[in-house]
Length: 280
Ligand code: PDD
Image (cartoon, rainbow, N blue to C red; front, side, top):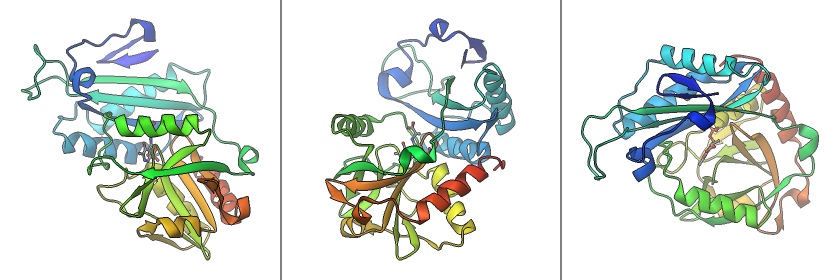
């Protein structure tokens, strides 16, 4: 079952008009949020970020937070066979009579789907993952979670073709994030990640990871990371709602920490698992 504009229906019965600006222009924003044991994780910050994305591109928010919570829970409850789910939620500016760049007052289109979700298992990542670096050619409003993701999908496809987990993006010698994840390094026991701003998506998982590190007594700093610092790191991690927090031990064929997962990632990973049972 999926949700489309007020109705729950089978996915193959859900259709959107060719005049929808989400289809014609990628004029829409989205959220991805994990569900653990039937409860949406970090629903409040996800709904707040959705509001901010909508506000940034001037789409009126079609629902209050309380209404969103009800719709999401109804969709989750339509899939009782899957305790853990991944929710994809999209709001487009809506349909117009003709294709034109400008828009008038339109009714936003709301589409939400749920997929079964299998969370990362620690034992699968003890050897670490690989990544490659590329120049960050994206626009300067990466903090808006827009569905216009051409650059991101090109990077993701390149990662797939290179058999690596993701592409690490570098803008003016500063590491921003990955094609669909935030990035952290650990150096001398301190966790570093790019500060919030127009060059990264403010990941909800990123916040949880920082809280987890803090809980474990590990200091954190939100500062720009240079490419040299990336390669010289003791540990490199990536984070997202669908990948949680994963270790990277090889970048562009260079080993990080001699190819070994460091000591801090397992602590933060374990704390993240504990946080999943708390409601944020
Ligand atoms: N992507 N940075 C980018 C560019 C992303 O696309 C994502 C998530 C993140 C991590 O954000 P969060 O922790 O809130 O998931 C960072 C989602 C999962 C996606 O596009 O499917």
